[in-house]
Length: 131
Image (cartoon, rainbow, N blue to C red; front, top):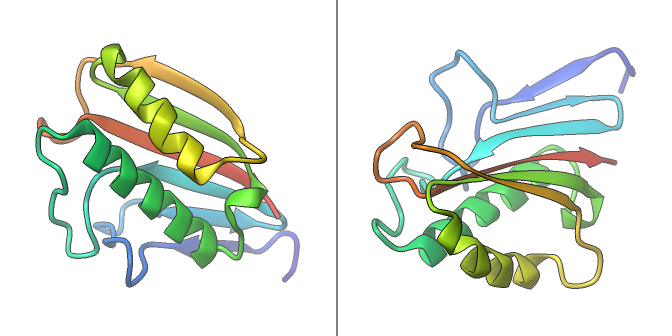
């Protein structure tokens, strides 16, 4: 791939597509930028209404699927940003996250926010990977 070439990925068979105004994932050279992943399944249906743990699992599964679509893996993930609507859920996220990043966790930031793009969403996770 030409280092100046930009590849945009709008969705996969595992992650719902976008409306075309943004990309789920953008790759340039060996850098991969994954947009915020939320608790929607491949059909765009909410997973785990009122269930933070189920939403965390779905969001991280989506993040992993977008990494793979961009030619990367969890091992290539350098940083994640986590946005939660209630910081009291931080220990739950930490436990779920540990199931994905046992040996080599990425840098991480967690921020409490008022709300996300859908009222039922409890968290969103984005990431940056170096391949």
